[in-house]
Length: 61
Image (cartoon, rainbow, N blue to C red; front, top):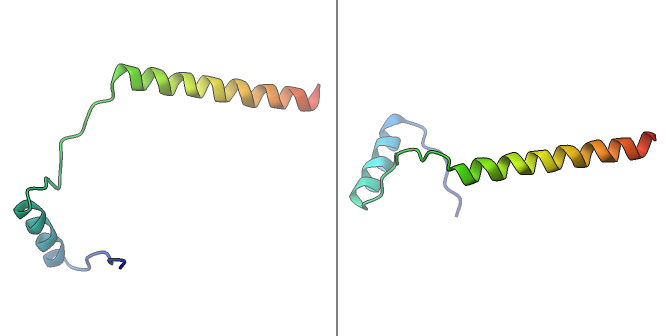
C-alpha cells in the first residue's frame, strides 16, 4: 500500500506528532563523514577516472 505525500501542513504536523509519540526522532542530527569514508570515496573516484581514461586511450590509440 503506497502512501501519498501529505498535502497540507496539518497532515505533516500529524505525521511528525505520531513519530514523536512512537519515540522516533524525525529530525536526527547530521552525522559528519569519517576519515575512512572520505578516503574510500576519494580512492573510488580515482579508480573510476583512471578506468575511463584507459578506456578512452584504448579506443583512440
